[in-house]
Length: 245
Image 1: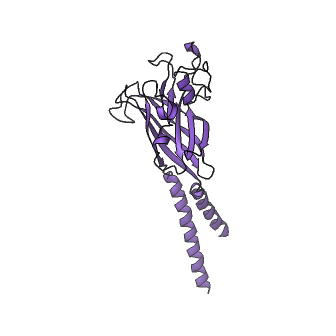
Image 2: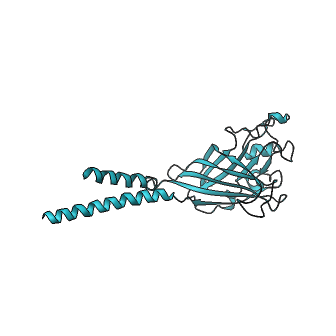
Image 3: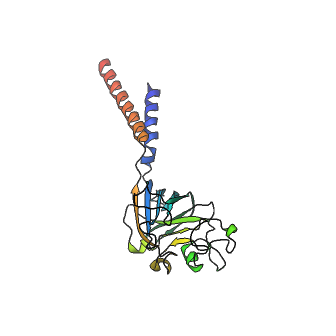
C-alpha cells in the first residue's frame, strides 16, 4: 500500500512539475509590423517561447513570419493566403536593463547571416540592415543569398505587461528569402525611433501581444488523477485505522 501511495504521489508531482517551477513559463507572442505599401497585409510573427523570470532568459523562441507581399489577409489568419516562413532557430538574446526586458531573435536558417557585410556590421541586426540598405548577404551574386529571415521580439520583465512606445520601437524583422519583388533588397521592418530609419517598404513595428500558454489537457488530467488517488488512499487508510480502533 505504501508503494501505491508513493506511486500516486509521484504521478501527481510529475504532472504538476511545470506548474511548480514558478520562475519558468511558456508564452505565445504575436508581433505586427504595419506595411503601408502592402495593405491590407502586414508582416506578422506568431510564435511561442519559454521565459525564466529569475534569470530574464528567453529560450525556445520559434514561430512563423508572414510575407506581406504575397497573397491576401482579408480572410484572417490562418485562412489568409500569404506565404508564411518558419523561424525555428533562436540564435540571439540579450537583456536590456534600461528598457526593462529581454530581446530575442529567431531565424529561418541555423545561422545569423542575413544582410551583406560590405558596409560593416554583424550581418543581421536591425542597425546593420539599415546601414546596408537592406541588401542581402552574398550580394551581388544572387545565388549566394542564403535567404535568411528573422523576427526580433522584446519580452518585458513581466511578460504579460503591455509594451511601451520605446520598447515597441525596437521590434524588427527581416525577410531575405529569394524570389522577392525587391531584387537585392530584403523586406524589413524598423522604426526611426529605434534604428534611425523605417523598413525598406516603409514597414514599422506596430504592436506586440504576449499571452500565457495554456497547459495541455493531458497534463491537468494526469495531475488530477494523481491527486485523486492520493486522496482516496488517504481516506482509505483513515477508515481502516478507525475500524481497527
